[in-house]
Image 1 (tube, rainbow, N blue to C red):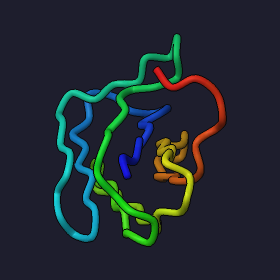
Image 2: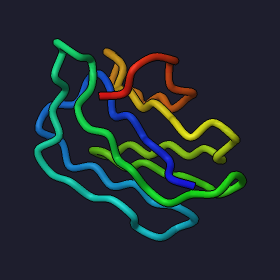
Image 3: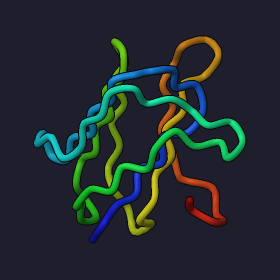
Length: 93
């Protein structure tokens, strides 16, 4: 299965790494949110249900087990915390 990890709000010229079961599957620098669409990047990684997805940005890390939905959303909130959850339904850019 191809998992889309939507990197949403709060990214400003960040270096982001996405790991699946401890293996680096995606890495970018200069990741910045485009507020006209509310997305910075979409990391597409191979991940089956039950796999552990980890996102690292700045000194923050968030982990989540992959479910049946092929999309996750990651945002950096105004307090500087990293939130990972189900992606909202709708178009993916």
